[in-house]
Figure 1 (cartoon, rainbow, N blue to C red):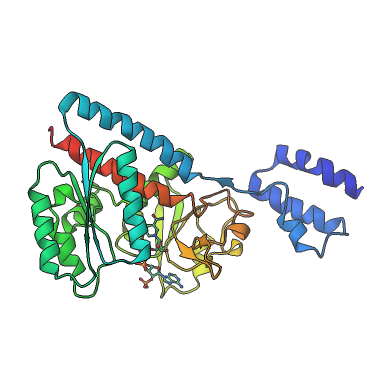
Figure 2: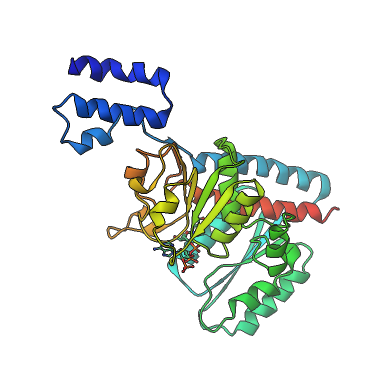
Length: 332
Ligand SMILES: NC(=O)c1ccc[n+]([C@@H]2O[C@H](COP(=O)([O-])OP(=O)(O)OC[C@H]3O[C@@H](n4cnc5c(N)ncnc54)[C@H](OP(=O)(O)O)[C@@H]3O)[C@@H](O)[C@H]2O)c1
């Protein structure tokens, strides 16, 4: 009897129950039939409930191919090559890798890129002078300063020094305000990438409970604005939130943007939820991982982004999209 249920049970239940119920029913059937009852790994490996993977790398490749075509057309018809200038201060290894990846992505898609690198002890006035020069250069369409900056810098003052029309990161106060008013000039790249991923995965947004863990200016807050604009009911959690799991378990869409390895575990996720992992962390053995414990989460979620290969590639892609848009606006 156990064997019959094991092999044919899935097909019977799949036809008549939605995925979240299927898992509960499957677990209770396996509990009822006895021998594997005290073997949690067996239950974890349910035949039913493995989340669909939202492949950010594949989506990024597709969007970048479209962008490259548009860049080629802009060059051919208008003689304009979209150009992104990236400023890096210091030699922080993670920042250096991000800048290298951004420049490489630009070149691969036919954009021009300018990379300005300064030592960690550079005087802020030198960097501000370079920003003023790039602001005035009509052949430069996007400017970004890689964060974080060394201590001697007033980060806000540096971000405000970039003219809003070239602020392709969307961090300038004027652009933040425009986003708040649902009239964005440039959408910050990481939340923009997340919205594209939700769209590509056809995740219903209207009326959905969206919970964001993290309230940073670059991820959590703009993410909240974008989901709110799509009529989600949005909750933003942070380090002082009480009973985090109470909030995350209500989420149809859960976005983790904290910077703490694997802090969101499967038992904090609503069955069938869409889980977007923005976090980039390193484990003790040097491997990359997100803020979500992928192994336990994928057994509960309906869809999930991996790390690496999830939000990261989409962030750079939307930076290119913003730079192209900025170049196209010069024609208007
Ligand atoms: N994939 C990408 O392209 C991409 C882009 C940007 C960032 N990231 C990654 O995303 C993560 C977040 O980045 P960020 O710049 O937004 O970080 P951040 O500025 O350090 O913000 C982290 C947020 O998490 C909250 N937090 C910290 N501990 C918490 C806890 N125990 N429970 C609930 N909330 C907690 C903080 O709350 P408080 O405000 O109360 O301190 C803060 O709002 C990092 O891993 C970063 O590397 C990835």
